[in-house]
Amino acid sequence: MRLYYYAHTGHKKGLDRLKKATALLKKLNEKGLDTMLLVNDFRAGLVAREFGIKESINIETIQDIDAIAKMEDAIIIDSPENDRGRLEKYVNEFKEVFRFAQNCNDSSRYGETIIDYRDIIVDDIYFEKHKKENRVLFFLGDSDANKTILSNKDFFKEANMELLLGHYFYVKYENDLAKIFTKLYEAEEYIDLICSSKIVVTLSLQTALEAQISGAKVIFIDENNQEDCLKEILDNLQILTVNGFNIKEYKHIVLNEISDCNLISKKSDIIALTILNKLIS
Image 1 (cartoon, rainbow, N blue to C red):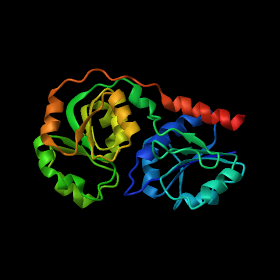
Image 2: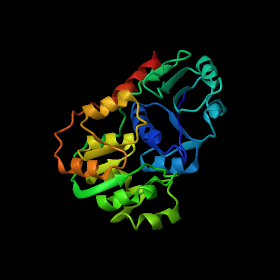
Image 3: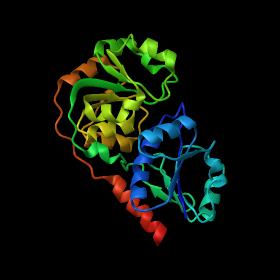
Image 4: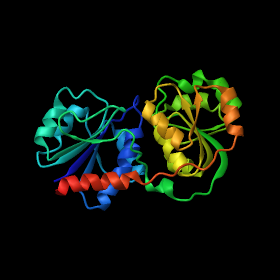
């Protein structure tokens, strides 16, 4: 039996799901499971190597999982795609199907095991102690197809930040960004910079969680598209939010000290055990 983990990735979707996948897959590999990561593009597979997963297979959509996996295999799905009836087929055919909930109210549809939308999965490296550099790091996400940064360049010029580029940023785009930020870092430096930056500002929920657990002061820019249950998580972890690119609100938050966050357990350990117990029962 092999466990296939499908994480939906791409230029428009970014790599938050990939980061969760690599953290959980490393836990499953430690427990002796034979696993394989499934992604949507070659670049995502290269990034997975940076995060410790050496092998992956590219598939086009969620509907292609059964072109790779066999009936005796198990699968994990983290995707918002329309499965067009495939999920029911997968539940009926595969040994076990685990699916990440895609919103607060998502529930099992055909008997698949749901991994709660509220579950926080981050790599163990973020729980380690790291020396902090006195930098304000901004990470939008791995993609900026809509050029959100350029649309808010006045905000960034006043904020005096350093930029961590996304893996899907275009080369020519960097020339424009260099005029806005005091320094640019390549996407391959992601882990080191998230761990070592004193202040991290981001629109990525996954990055906000990783940075907060690593001990940074985190400011999450909320564009009012977050689920209510995740807003509760942000509050519990003392991750402060700015409503959009509001420079006055941002400066007020930066000047105020933040108390220590409520540390969370290594949820990936718990989820890995749940998966393992399901597979051996």
